[in-house]
Image (cartoon, rainbow, N blue to C red; front, top):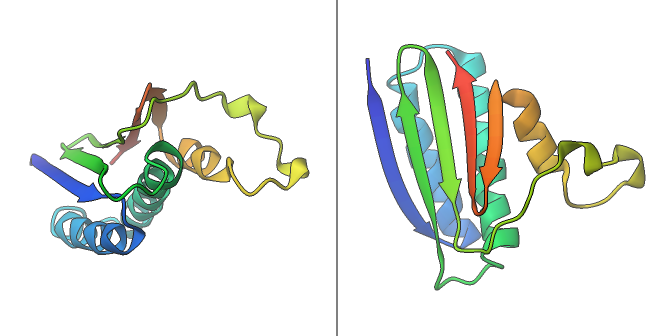
Length: 128
């Protein structure tokens, strides 16, 4: 089993919602495990929304690229925005500060078996 999906969506949260919905429909055809599907949905939502808001600053002329690769062993989710990127440091987020931003990447990191950011591309790997 091998499944690859490439999508590109503009930085409009309404279009992003539809795009993620369509991606999940495709994943449901290839993944039987509801827990993996739930995690994939949350990871996709957080990474794409993060790219729209923080990477592309909701500039609708900029886009978000989503790439999924599903093999027998893992689901790899790559989300790339058109921002300048940043260095992710999980330990810098303090939940006691009650900040409005920062939680999403911590959630993604917790749901992923592997997670890293290279400039403006976030990569989550979930073993299946």
